[in-house]
Length: 137
Image (cartoon, rainbow, N blue to C red; front, side, top):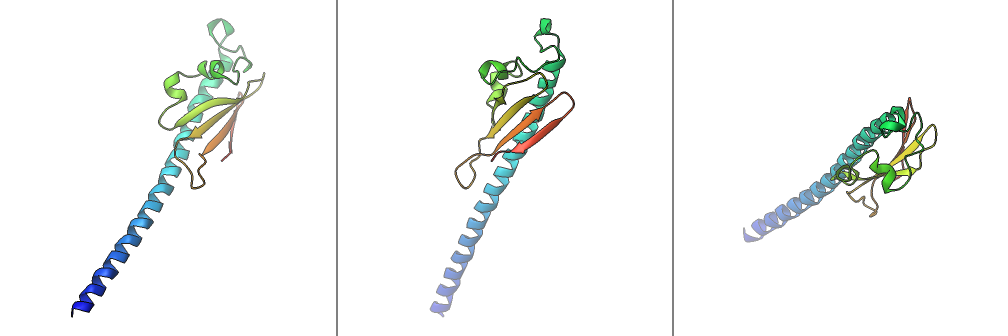
């Protein structure tokens, strides 16, 4: 009788261990998916700010129907959002390609590491009437 109880305890420990390992994997996958979704939402917010910048007159701090003032540095992204938004709990955001007369490319990089150690990253190309997302990583 003692051997049977010992085998049941060992089997129980194995089942619980496997369940915990699977649960950790599922949680990590969900965390990455949640981070990706949050990055896309933040990029959409920045794109609407970029389109507002495009339409705003230069005398009011806008681009006067151009994205040229949105440079690929801290000054350029600072025209769209404050420091608290540029680096928040979801990720960090920048201008990947400086604005031209017709478009600007925004980049969002997540904060939850992927299994390979890199981080989720998206580029969002903004024009006056459209937005297109490219998954970088």
